[in-house]
Image (cartoon, rainbow, N blue to C red; front, side):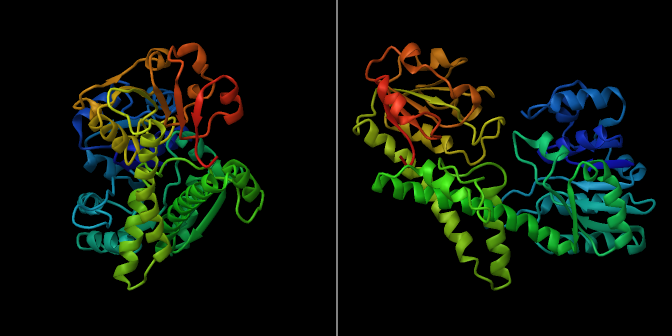
Amino acid sequence: MKICMVGTGYVGLVSGACFADLGNIVYCVDKDKKKIDKLNSGEIPIYEPGLDEIVKKNYQSNRLKFTQNLSNAVKVSDIIFICVGTPTSKKNKSADLSFVFNVAKEISKNINKFKIIVTKSTVPVTTGDKIEKIISKKRSKKLFEVVSNPEFLREGDAVRDFRFPDRIVVGCNNKKIIKKLEFLYEPLIKKGCIFFSTNRRGAEMIKYASNAFLATKISYINEIANFCEKTKVNIEDVSLGMGLDKRIGGRFLRAGPAYGGSCFPKDTKAITVTADSYKTNLSIIKAVIKSNSNRRMLLIKRIDKILSNKIKNKKITVLGVTFKPNTDDMRESTSLLMLPYLNKKGAKITYYDPSGEKNVFNKLKNVSFSHNIIHACLKADLVIIHTEWDEFKSIDFKKICKNKNLKVYDMRNLYSSDKMKKIGVNYYSIGR
């Protein structure tokens, strides 16, 4: 099939490259000339393990093309995926759908034969209806079908998630169109993936409901971790004991910093706004949003206690600043509050992240980026493990840190409290 992916951000680029890898001809379209030029020169704009190899392979095989020419890409394609951003609106907490609707208008101008138009962007329920209305102003409804096919890609695991998804959800009322989408995903279905079809609004709701539920699990276990600290219970034992119940499951029950990234923060807010417009109070999700917001400062303020409220001139090392490992995504990361907070208190901060230096911290005085763990930790008074990158899981702190009074604040519970105590490190963790 010939496919057009509108938007070469995280979803569009990963999905486009993987669709090409399944044997389709894929046109990845973006109006950002610099991004298209970089992609055509082999430079990948996002950090995602395994993506560069797939892009290179399919680009060289002429199955994957990068272009600014939306008009041509739409005309030659059978299926058009809308993969543009839906950030939180500056006016309220709803999703900003201006990019989606602008793409719909452009698509409507270039429909020359029957097209399947698929929203892969995360959009509130009824968005597909609005897209259909926009396009029908220019083209007969006989020339297109609007479908919802939400993405379920985790940053850092996106390539694997595309190739081995838990499920593929397609929302459409037309059985013939559902069959065509099923044919597109046939290579994945043959490997055991569940293909689930529902109506368009149902698919839109599934995406938001899924993200809100996962965010709820994270906030829930973080609050239980707070309780565990007060009662001297190990949160890891609690998480394991809960997770063994098949009705609950162990995933997303790891205590740590507040959830961040491009999905959970904006999607939990957006679904509550949409529900409010239908006079439905999603009180549980609203509580999750509030709990997650409080979580950021709760963990940051604990640094004051660890350093006995004497942060000024302390040398603090932060290991990992992205919201999770295997991605360069900084959106809604706790580090965006933590580093400025410590900086304002007079700390001298060194940070290291495998995904590289972050421009957002360049304006802060006494904050510097280190290119390796040893240099970053050498003279530290406090080491904060913020992100659970694999290379942070086996650090010999006694060997690489010269400070005998070293303190380690492990926000990800990567180390054993007993083992750290045995080697003489003042160790602080979450919920233990």
